[in-house]
Length: 371
Ligand SMILES: *Cc1c(COP(=O)(O)O)cnc(C)c1O
Image 1 (cartoon, rainbow, N blue to C red):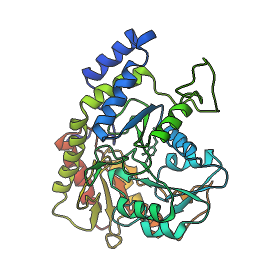
Image 2 (image 1 turned 45 degrees about the horizontal axis):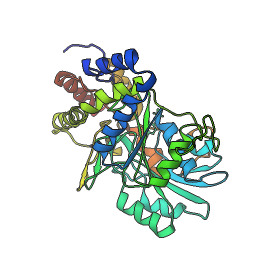
Image 3 (image 1 turned 180 degrees about the horizontal axis):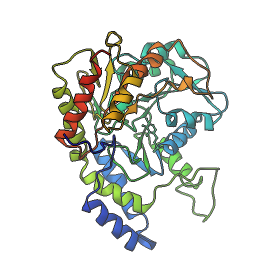
C-alpha cells in the first residue's frame, strides 16, 4: 500500500468556486460589491431554514456579536462544555463575562444538561450549546432548562453543518446559531462565518453591530449610533461560499460516506466508540472520531506514534478548556479530562479515497494489538 501523506483535512474546491471567485475579483465592485454576500446569505437561509443570516469574517466574530446583542457583559456567566475549541469561549471573555465550564456526556461528547442546570447562578446569562464534531447536544433538555430559568440557549454550530435535530438544522433551535467556514470545515470560504437567527430584533442588533454600529434605518452617512464591530465577510469569500452552497449536499453526503466507510472497516473489532447518531438526529460527521474504552489500554500518545509512522495526520481530541493556563482547572469534569487521553480524530476530507480510509482503519486496528 502506498505511504503518501494523508492529511486530516483539505477543502474541496472545484471550477465552480474558482469561477465565482474570479468573477467577484473582476466584477464584484461598486454597485455589485455585496452581490455574492447577499446570495450566499440567501442560500444559507434556505439550506438551514433560518429566517435571517448575516455573513461574517469568522465564527468567533459571529459569537462575539451575538453575545453582545444579548447584552452580555462584565461579570456575567455563560455556561458551556469544558470540551471545546477556544473560539467558543474566547468571545465570552472579550465582553468581560466568564465562561463556566461543565462536563460532557460520555457518548455525545457534548454538554451534559444536568451539569448545566447545576451550574446556573443569578449571573448566568446564556447557555452555549456547541455541537462538537457534528454530534448534537440534547437540545430538548437544554431548551427546557433555558425556559425554566429564563436563560437564552444559543448554539455554536461551527462543526455541525448538515446536522439535524428532529428535522431542525443545527443552529436554528436556540436564540441564535453560528457557523465557521475556516479551511478545515465542511463548507469553506478560507476564513468566514455566519450568524443565523429567527428573532427579528436580534437580527437588527447584530446587523448594526456588524457594521460598526450603523443602524439599518440611519439615513445620516457615516453615523454610527453605537460602538460596533468590523466582522464582515468580503464579496470574494462569499463568492467561494456560493459555489460551496451549490455543492453542499455533496459536501455533507461525502462526510457521511467517509464516516460509514470507517464504521464498516472497523466492524470486526470492538473496544471503541465513534460519533453517535441518536434517534431523531442526523449527524453531519464533520470529524469522525474514535474513543477507545479504558480497558483497551490505547492512549493518545500511542495513537500519535502509530499514525505518524504511517504518514497519517493525527489530530487530537480537544483538551478541556479548563486545563488551559488562562482558566482554573475543573478536575471534577471527569469525562472532559479523561476522554481526550484515549481518543483521536480521523482524516475525513472530501477527496479521501477508499484505499486511504482502509489505511487509516488498519492503524486503528493495529493500535489494539498489545505491546
Ligand atoms: C472552528 C470553530 C470555531 C471558530 O471558527 P472561526 O471561523 O475560526 O472563528 C468556533 N467554534 C467551533 C465549535 C469551531 O469548531
